[in-house]
Image 1 (tube, rainbow, N blue to C red):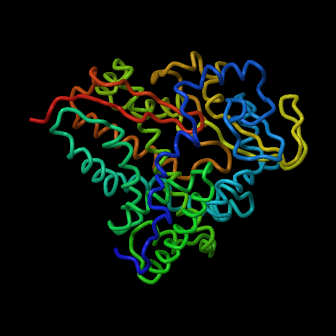
Image 2 (cartoon, rainbow, N blue to C red):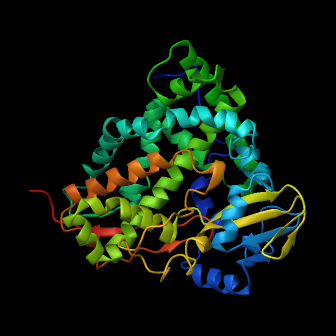
Image 3 (tube, one colour):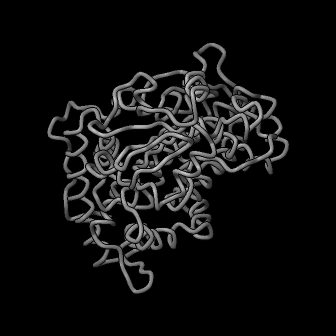
Length: 414
């Protein structure tokens, strides 16, 4: 479907937003020993998570704290009377827009979230698995299935969740390349001018797209979001545009990272991979364990509304509080032998999708995409194993985690 508005490229066409990942999110191979060492100092520590890990902080001029305990993480993420999501305004708000539900608190947050939840209910999302996700997955795999080898990140996981979004939005093929560059560039907070430029240009594009779909609605996600109402209310344009800006990162980027980590963990633990091959009822457990063991988003931010105290530490009003989900998900008091990837462990709720009223609205779609991807891998890439002649996958980052490559071999299709 064509749009009346031509999507605009970065003013500097040489700028590469894909190189921003390591600068913004770190390049650490294994941050967990340092996270554990911090946890031994206390469940709540002064300083931001990035500062405590030896990286520059994105925000200054306010007190900062790092939360590393499981119980303390639960308190901060669920007690909305004491902790606000407004801390995201200088970053997400500056690029996705101040209408982003990630920056809003109740009552605004609850009012607009109801519309998103209505569209992303599990019964609706499951139907996308067969109509949208499967064709994308198989279309990508068909390009390398007869080769007997592949890089599952570059050729598969890095691409498929984004292509799912293109299909959901029914974007013109001619717009996809520039759209992805702008969407990725929005989170280059080290180069904030570029991030804001991307947000402005995507905002102009989406406003045109919304006008077009409202005039001629279809069954795509933009049409659904533009026309769905709850309690007689439609989404305001500010909130809708902010959500669409964020969709690429919240639904595409995190799913690509989560799926890449899942495949890495299974290939590095072939006995568990074989167990899943023999019993696919284990797939949900494998997905939840991958999200717990090395979830794509290591740290989540909140802001103290009033002076408060947490685990004996005084936190003043306005302080930024980094909740380290990666620490909460590896709390030895909750998860025995927490650094081990084990799909057979007793399942307990994790923090990969956050907790409380801001729990990820797209979590059901993420699970559908990860499930369909794993089924497709087992159905089509027989005798899949890591390529012994190429470097092993390395999951890197302190804020967002992902391997750059997963080199594999498999039996060629007959």
